Length: 358
Image (cartoon, rainbow, N blue to C red):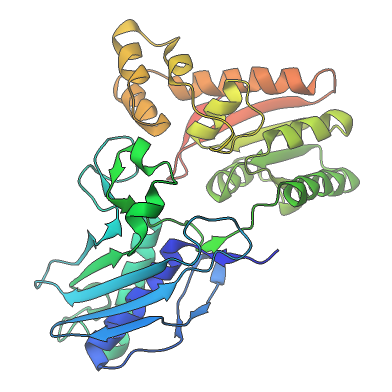
Protein backbone atom coordinates (compact mmCIF):
# COMPACT_ATOMS: atom_id res chain seq x y z
CA UNK A 1 0.00 0.00 0.00
CA UNK A 2 1.13 3.54 -0.76
CA UNK A 3 2.50 5.64 2.08
CA UNK A 4 1.49 9.29 2.53
CA UNK A 5 2.64 12.42 4.34
CA UNK A 6 1.47 13.84 7.65
CA UNK A 7 0.03 17.30 8.14
CA UNK A 8 3.29 18.13 9.92
CA UNK A 9 5.36 17.18 6.86
CA UNK A 10 3.09 19.21 4.59
CA UNK A 11 3.28 22.21 6.92
CA UNK A 12 7.08 21.92 6.94
CA UNK A 13 7.17 21.94 3.13
CA UNK A 14 4.83 24.93 2.93
CA UNK A 15 6.82 26.79 5.58
CA UNK A 16 10.10 26.12 3.78
CA UNK A 17 8.71 27.44 0.49
CA UNK A 18 7.10 30.49 2.08
CA UNK A 19 10.21 31.54 4.00
CA UNK A 20 12.40 31.01 0.94
CA UNK A 21 10.08 33.32 -1.05
CA UNK A 22 10.08 35.87 1.76
CA UNK A 23 13.89 36.05 1.60
CA UNK A 24 14.43 35.65 -2.15
CA UNK A 25 11.18 36.65 -3.85
CA UNK A 26 10.83 33.22 -5.48
CA UNK A 27 9.00 30.06 -4.40
CA UNK A 28 10.85 26.75 -4.82
CA UNK A 29 8.50 24.35 -6.58
CA UNK A 30 8.75 21.50 -5.88
CA UNK A 31 10.18 22.11 -2.43
CA UNK A 32 12.34 19.48 -0.74
CA UNK A 33 12.29 18.98 3.03
CA UNK A 34 14.25 16.93 5.54
CA UNK A 35 12.22 14.53 7.66
CA UNK A 36 13.27 12.09 10.39
CA UNK A 37 14.99 8.83 9.41
CA UNK A 38 16.79 10.48 6.50
CA UNK A 39 13.78 10.99 4.27
CA UNK A 40 13.95 13.94 1.82
CA UNK A 41 10.64 14.10 -0.08
CA UNK A 42 9.73 16.88 -2.51
CA UNK A 43 6.29 18.53 -2.45
CA UNK A 44 4.53 20.37 -5.24
CA UNK A 45 3.02 23.72 -4.29
CA UNK A 46 -0.72 24.28 -4.70
CA UNK A 47 -0.64 27.92 -3.59
CA UNK A 48 1.93 30.71 -3.85
CA UNK A 49 1.29 34.23 -2.60
CA UNK A 50 3.91 36.90 -1.92
CA UNK A 51 2.62 39.94 -0.06
CA UNK A 52 3.97 43.00 1.68
CA UNK A 53 6.11 41.53 4.46
CA UNK A 54 4.67 38.03 4.23
CA UNK A 55 4.68 34.95 2.02
CA UNK A 56 2.15 32.13 1.85
CA UNK A 57 2.62 28.67 0.35
CA UNK A 58 0.26 25.72 0.33
CA UNK A 59 0.59 21.95 -0.09
CA UNK A 60 -2.19 19.44 -0.70
CA UNK A 61 -1.96 16.60 1.81
CA UNK A 62 -1.58 13.16 0.27
CA UNK A 63 -2.30 10.48 2.87
CA UNK A 64 -1.45 7.66 0.46
CA UNK A 65 -3.75 4.66 0.85
CA UNK A 66 -4.61 5.50 4.46
CA UNK A 67 -8.28 6.46 5.11
CA UNK A 68 -7.27 9.79 6.66
CA UNK A 69 -9.89 12.52 7.03
CA UNK A 70 -7.30 15.14 6.10
CA UNK A 71 -6.43 13.50 2.76
CA UNK A 72 -6.71 16.18 0.07
CA UNK A 73 -6.73 19.07 2.55
CA UNK A 74 -4.81 22.24 1.71
CA UNK A 75 -2.14 22.97 4.31
CA UNK A 76 -1.11 26.63 4.22
CA UNK A 77 1.82 28.38 5.86
CA UNK A 78 2.18 32.14 6.06
CA UNK A 79 5.57 33.36 7.22
CA UNK A 80 6.45 36.86 8.40
CA UNK A 81 9.57 38.29 9.95
CA UNK A 82 9.40 38.44 13.74
CA UNK A 83 10.81 41.03 16.14
CA UNK A 84 14.55 40.78 16.67
CA UNK A 85 15.36 38.17 19.28
CA UNK A 86 11.85 36.70 19.32
CA UNK A 87 12.80 33.36 17.72
CA UNK A 88 10.21 31.29 15.92
CA UNK A 89 6.59 31.84 16.94
CA UNK A 90 3.73 29.60 15.82
CA UNK A 91 0.16 30.77 15.33
CA UNK A 92 -3.07 28.96 14.51
CA UNK A 93 -4.68 30.26 11.36
CA UNK A 94 -8.20 29.39 10.16
CA UNK A 95 -8.88 25.67 10.48
CA UNK A 96 -6.08 24.92 12.98
CA UNK A 97 -7.18 24.31 16.55
CA UNK A 98 -6.16 25.87 19.84
CA UNK A 99 -5.53 23.88 23.01
CA UNK A 100 -8.04 24.70 25.77
CA UNK A 101 -7.62 21.81 28.21
CA UNK A 102 -4.60 20.27 30.00
CA UNK A 103 -3.26 16.82 29.30
CA UNK A 104 -1.80 17.38 25.84
CA UNK A 105 1.89 17.86 24.93
CA UNK A 106 1.16 21.57 24.45
CA UNK A 107 0.23 24.26 26.94
CA UNK A 108 -3.31 25.61 27.16
CA UNK A 109 -3.69 28.51 24.73
CA UNK A 110 -1.10 27.19 22.28
CA UNK A 111 -1.87 26.42 18.63
CA UNK A 112 -2.47 22.69 18.11
CA UNK A 113 0.81 22.26 16.26
CA UNK A 114 2.55 19.33 17.90
CA UNK A 115 6.17 19.40 19.14
CA UNK A 116 7.77 17.37 16.32
CA UNK A 117 6.22 19.42 13.48
CA UNK A 118 7.32 22.56 15.33
CA UNK A 119 10.85 21.24 15.49
CA UNK A 120 10.84 20.25 11.82
CA UNK A 121 9.60 23.68 10.77
CA UNK A 122 12.09 25.48 13.01
CA UNK A 123 14.97 23.43 11.60
CA UNK A 124 13.74 24.14 8.06
CA UNK A 125 13.63 27.88 8.75
CA UNK A 126 17.18 27.78 10.05
CA UNK A 127 18.42 25.97 6.96
CA UNK A 128 16.73 28.52 4.69
CA UNK A 129 18.10 31.41 6.74
CA UNK A 130 21.58 29.95 6.58
CA UNK A 131 21.32 29.57 2.81
CA UNK A 132 19.86 32.99 2.04
CA UNK A 133 21.01 35.24 4.88
CA UNK A 134 17.72 35.36 6.71
CA UNK A 135 19.42 36.08 10.03
CA UNK A 136 21.19 39.14 8.70
CA UNK A 137 24.44 39.98 10.42
CA UNK A 138 23.84 37.79 13.47
CA UNK A 139 26.98 36.09 14.73
CA UNK A 140 25.32 32.65 14.66
CA UNK A 141 22.91 32.94 11.77
CA UNK A 142 21.67 29.36 12.02
CA UNK A 143 20.30 29.95 15.53
CA UNK A 144 19.04 33.48 14.99
CA UNK A 145 15.84 33.05 12.96
CA UNK A 146 13.08 35.45 14.01
CA UNK A 147 9.88 34.44 12.24
CA UNK A 148 6.14 34.17 12.78
CA UNK A 149 4.66 31.04 11.23
CA UNK A 150 0.89 30.79 10.84
CA UNK A 151 -0.50 27.42 9.75
CA UNK A 152 -3.99 27.24 8.25
CA UNK A 153 -6.25 24.53 6.84
CA UNK A 154 -9.22 26.14 5.04
CA UNK A 155 -11.60 23.21 5.69
CA UNK A 156 -10.01 22.32 9.01
CA UNK A 157 -12.85 23.35 11.31
CA UNK A 158 -15.28 21.08 9.50
CA UNK A 159 -12.82 18.19 9.23
CA UNK A 160 -12.02 18.43 12.94
CA UNK A 161 -15.56 17.35 13.77
CA UNK A 162 -14.62 13.90 12.45
CA UNK A 163 -11.68 13.67 14.87
CA UNK A 164 -11.22 13.49 18.64
CA UNK A 165 -10.20 17.16 18.81
CA UNK A 166 -13.47 18.56 20.19
CA UNK A 167 -13.49 15.94 22.95
CA UNK A 168 -9.86 16.72 23.81
CA UNK A 169 -10.52 20.43 24.12
CA UNK A 170 -8.84 21.42 20.85
CA UNK A 171 -11.21 24.02 19.43
CA UNK A 172 -11.38 25.72 16.09
CA UNK A 173 -9.88 23.08 13.85
CA UNK A 174 -7.36 20.33 13.27
CA UNK A 175 -4.07 19.44 14.91
CA UNK A 176 -0.84 19.53 12.92
CA UNK A 177 0.60 16.11 13.68
CA UNK A 178 3.31 13.60 12.86
CA UNK A 179 6.43 12.19 14.48
CA UNK A 180 8.09 10.76 11.36
CA UNK A 181 6.38 12.80 8.65
CA UNK A 182 5.07 9.61 7.04
CA UNK A 183 1.53 8.20 7.08
CA UNK A 184 1.65 4.40 7.12
CA UNK A 185 -1.45 2.91 5.44
CA UNK A 186 -3.64 1.24 8.01
CA UNK A 187 -4.18 -2.29 6.71
CA UNK A 188 -5.08 -4.58 9.60
CA UNK A 189 -4.42 -7.82 7.77
CA UNK A 190 -1.07 -6.67 6.36
CA UNK A 191 0.10 -5.34 9.72
CA UNK A 192 -0.90 -8.49 11.59
CA UNK A 193 0.80 -10.62 8.97
CA UNK A 194 4.01 -8.60 9.39
CA UNK A 195 3.86 -9.19 13.16
CA UNK A 196 3.58 -12.93 12.62
CA UNK A 197 6.50 -12.93 10.18
CA UNK A 198 8.52 -10.93 12.71
CA UNK A 199 7.94 -13.60 15.34
CA UNK A 200 8.85 -16.31 12.84
CA UNK A 201 12.14 -14.60 12.01
CA UNK A 202 12.98 -14.03 15.69
CA UNK A 203 12.37 -17.71 16.45
CA UNK A 204 14.38 -18.86 13.45
CA UNK A 205 17.31 -16.74 14.62
CA UNK A 206 17.11 -18.23 18.10
CA UNK A 207 16.14 -15.02 19.93
CA UNK A 208 14.98 -15.73 23.46
CA UNK A 209 13.71 -12.21 24.09
CA UNK A 210 11.47 -10.18 21.77
CA UNK A 211 9.73 -6.85 22.27
CA UNK A 212 6.47 -5.50 20.92
CA UNK A 213 6.26 -1.69 20.87
CA UNK A 214 3.36 0.61 20.10
CA UNK A 215 5.52 3.23 18.38
CA UNK A 216 9.00 4.38 17.41
CA UNK A 217 9.82 6.05 20.74
CA UNK A 218 8.91 3.03 22.87
CA UNK A 219 10.70 0.74 20.41
CA UNK A 220 13.90 2.78 20.72
CA UNK A 221 13.68 2.74 24.52
CA UNK A 222 13.08 -0.99 24.85
CA UNK A 223 15.82 -1.82 22.34
CA UNK A 224 18.36 0.29 24.25
CA UNK A 225 17.24 -0.93 27.66
CA UNK A 226 17.70 -4.61 26.81
CA UNK A 227 20.21 -4.42 23.97
CA UNK A 228 17.83 -6.09 21.53
CA UNK A 229 18.71 -6.35 17.83
CA UNK A 230 16.30 -5.18 15.13
CA UNK A 231 15.26 -8.75 14.38
CA UNK A 232 13.91 -9.09 17.95
CA UNK A 233 11.68 -6.02 17.64
CA UNK A 234 8.04 -6.47 16.64
CA UNK A 235 6.24 -3.45 15.17
CA UNK A 236 3.17 -4.08 17.30
CA UNK A 237 1.39 -0.74 16.84
CA UNK A 238 -2.16 -1.10 18.13
CA UNK A 239 -2.26 -4.88 17.59
CA UNK A 240 -1.33 -6.18 21.04
CA UNK A 241 -3.70 -9.08 20.53
CA UNK A 242 -1.91 -10.19 17.37
CA UNK A 243 1.41 -10.34 19.23
CA UNK A 244 0.05 -12.19 22.25
CA UNK A 245 -2.06 -14.69 20.35
CA UNK A 246 0.68 -15.60 17.88
CA UNK A 247 3.29 -15.96 20.64
CA UNK A 248 0.86 -18.21 22.49
CA UNK A 249 1.01 -20.60 19.54
CA UNK A 250 4.67 -19.92 18.67
CA UNK A 251 6.34 -19.03 21.98
CA UNK A 252 9.66 -17.40 22.77
CA UNK A 253 10.96 -17.44 26.35
CA UNK A 254 10.46 -13.73 27.02
CA UNK A 255 8.32 -10.87 25.72
CA UNK A 256 8.52 -7.20 26.68
CA UNK A 257 5.62 -4.94 25.77
CA UNK A 258 6.51 -1.25 25.55
CA UNK A 259 4.20 1.64 24.87
CA UNK A 260 2.83 5.01 25.81
CA UNK A 261 0.74 5.48 28.93
CA UNK A 262 -2.59 5.68 27.10
CA UNK A 263 -1.97 2.58 24.97
CA UNK A 264 -0.75 0.49 27.90
CA UNK A 265 -3.72 1.70 29.97
CA UNK A 266 -6.04 0.17 27.38
CA UNK A 267 -4.15 -3.12 27.56
CA UNK A 268 -4.41 -2.97 31.35
CA UNK A 269 -8.17 -2.61 30.98
CA UNK A 270 -8.37 -5.79 28.90
CA UNK A 271 -8.29 -4.39 25.35
CA UNK A 272 -6.31 -6.24 22.68
CA UNK A 273 -6.87 -3.62 19.95
CA UNK A 274 -5.41 -0.33 21.15
CA UNK A 275 -6.59 1.89 18.29
CA UNK A 276 -8.57 4.96 19.36
CA UNK A 277 -11.51 3.96 17.14
CA UNK A 278 -11.91 0.62 18.91
CA UNK A 279 -10.92 1.19 22.53
CA UNK A 280 -10.82 4.09 24.96
CA UNK A 281 -8.86 4.82 28.13
CA UNK A 282 -10.95 3.99 31.21
CA UNK A 283 -10.24 6.90 33.56
CA UNK A 284 -12.43 5.37 36.27
CA UNK A 285 -10.27 2.25 36.21
CA UNK A 286 -7.13 4.37 36.48
CA UNK A 287 -8.58 6.09 39.52
CA UNK A 288 -9.48 2.88 41.36
CA UNK A 289 -6.20 2.47 43.25
CA UNK A 290 -5.44 6.17 43.69
CA UNK A 291 -5.82 7.94 47.04
CA UNK A 292 -9.31 9.44 47.44
CA UNK A 293 -8.17 13.04 46.99
CA UNK A 294 -6.47 12.12 43.71
CA UNK A 295 -9.03 9.64 42.40
CA UNK A 296 -11.63 12.31 41.67
CA UNK A 297 -9.15 14.40 39.74
CA UNK A 298 -8.09 11.39 37.65
CA UNK A 299 -11.71 10.56 36.83
CA UNK A 300 -12.18 14.12 35.63
CA UNK A 301 -8.94 14.26 33.65
CA UNK A 302 -9.03 15.44 30.05
CA UNK A 303 -6.76 12.70 28.69
CA UNK A 304 -4.67 9.78 29.86
CA UNK A 305 -1.62 12.05 29.72
CA UNK A 306 -3.42 14.49 32.01
CA UNK A 307 -4.12 11.65 34.46
CA UNK A 308 -0.44 10.69 34.36
CA UNK A 309 0.63 14.29 34.98
CA UNK A 310 -1.76 14.64 37.93
CA UNK A 311 -0.45 11.40 39.43
CA UNK A 312 3.19 12.34 38.96
CA UNK A 313 2.58 15.70 40.63
CA UNK A 314 1.01 13.88 43.59
CA UNK A 315 3.82 11.33 43.79
CA UNK A 316 1.46 8.47 42.96
CA UNK A 317 3.11 5.65 40.88
CA UNK A 318 0.26 5.21 38.42
CA UNK A 319 2.66 4.17 35.64
CA UNK A 320 3.87 1.17 37.64
CA UNK A 321 0.33 0.17 38.54
CA UNK A 322 -0.78 0.33 34.90
CA UNK A 323 2.28 -1.66 33.81
CA UNK A 324 1.60 -4.39 36.37
CA UNK A 325 -2.07 -4.65 35.45
CA UNK A 326 -1.19 -4.79 31.75
CA UNK A 327 1.33 -7.53 32.48
CA UNK A 328 -1.29 -9.56 34.34
CA UNK A 329 -3.73 -9.33 31.44
CA UNK A 330 -1.06 -10.11 28.84
CA UNK A 331 0.04 -13.15 30.86
CA UNK A 332 -3.55 -14.39 30.99
CA UNK A 333 -3.79 -14.21 27.19
CA UNK A 334 -0.45 -16.00 26.75
CA UNK A 335 -1.23 -18.81 29.21
CA UNK A 336 -0.35 -21.64 29.22
CA UNK A 337 2.46 -20.85 26.76
CA UNK A 338 5.94 -20.72 28.40
CA UNK A 339 6.41 -16.98 27.78
CA UNK A 340 7.51 -14.61 30.55
CA UNK A 341 6.14 -11.12 29.95
CA UNK A 342 6.97 -7.70 31.35
CA UNK A 343 5.73 -4.22 30.48
CA UNK A 344 7.36 -0.79 30.11
CA UNK A 345 5.40 2.46 30.03
CA UNK A 346 7.21 5.22 28.15
CA UNK A 347 6.30 8.89 27.84
CA UNK A 348 6.62 11.04 24.70
CA UNK A 349 10.13 12.11 25.63
CA UNK A 350 11.31 8.51 25.89
CA UNK A 351 11.39 8.38 29.68
CA UNK A 352 10.26 5.16 31.36
CA UNK A 353 7.37 6.12 33.65
CA UNK A 354 6.17 2.65 34.57
CA UNK A 355 7.59 -0.87 34.94
CA UNK A 356 5.81 -4.09 35.76
CA UNK A 357 8.76 -6.12 36.95
CA UNK A 358 9.52 -9.60 35.61
